[in-house]
Image (cartoon, rainbow, N blue to C red; front, side):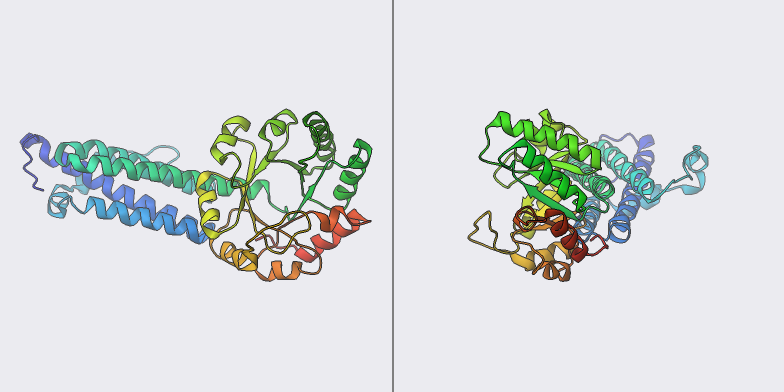
Length: 358
């Protein structure tokens, strides 16, 4: 590539390369800031790696622009923009606002690079467009990580329950679970007719709202919407996260079951609010051919900071293995709801999980 591109009038040549140089620097600087945020503020190995890869890919793509032309056109001493300052330019409320400002810097500079590269290097425009879309996806993943961590702060014990034989028995169980310190209750029942299941869901919504407990519907996005649930939990074969989001809206909590580190990584990029990781142990309610076990918990704890609950056969006798694997959140079913004293069983499990959220 040469600086004497035939479509560039001589008077515009230096101006064009100044724009490319400034936006190259602005983009790479912004990417370093957001990478530091993922690395140090979020401690998320997965997203840190993706931010770093994006930074390297941007640098490699722009390496085809001649450094000699970029540097020759640079004129910081006479750049009128250096003295133009807005009221908020030097104000950042917190780390999240630092991240947001720098994602804007990255995305806007990529767009400027894309537009101006069309003049001297049209082949770069498509590559820069793809990089900009990757930046949008990474910004979303880090923002959802932040908001999900806030909404699920302190949520350790997640209990799955069926609809019971009667509304009275169901209501009593819900009261017991709330009294025992359950943080999230998921209604999962494949046997009840839809109308009855919706009645139970609405009852659960009423009780959980009274106790400040989150209510999640299993699988059924339609019933989650009708019962005003806080969210829905999806399996790998159910609706995709993005489809559930379209129906339930941006405020809904959407969880997804993951059975491998690859599925966990993908769920983060798909926009899930939390993960269910397992099965960890054999379960009394579901059968599985493959158990990723505590090895999966260790992988997720090492790479991912999106809230994640260990699931599958967890009970008082094995919860210490969950904690040792780096998890202090767990989803349980029969270990609590089948106990003669559900409140006590819930309290014991929550105590065993400890108080430090991972």
